[in-house]
Length: 154
Image (tube, rainbow, N blue to C red; front, top):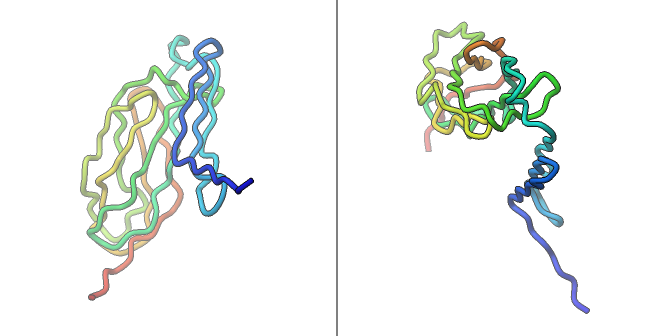
């Protein structure tokens, strides 16, 4: 019997009875990013408490002026469960900005099922930075440090 490889790029499966969301990215064989998130229970939307923000996908290295890989900010409840009912606006800005660089792209995104995706951000000067995410009623959260490099010619 031949060997079979099952590749899985993204699988999102919701068990409605127990309100558990499982998100898997990667594959069973070869390179892949593996498990990226598991959330479960209640959704956090009914307590009335403000969300807690976190970077679900951190910013990565890019050349100056080039679009970075998408950054994702998640809204959770106080127990760390993704608040799938949260659809508020999340704003992202540069912090730790000693070079006076400008952040370009859409800096405010509305969350969908508790996650806001920023897919067109760029920084115009080389340096090391952090992003800060904010939303109404929640404490600001700061990303890991990332580097913008000087673009080199062809």
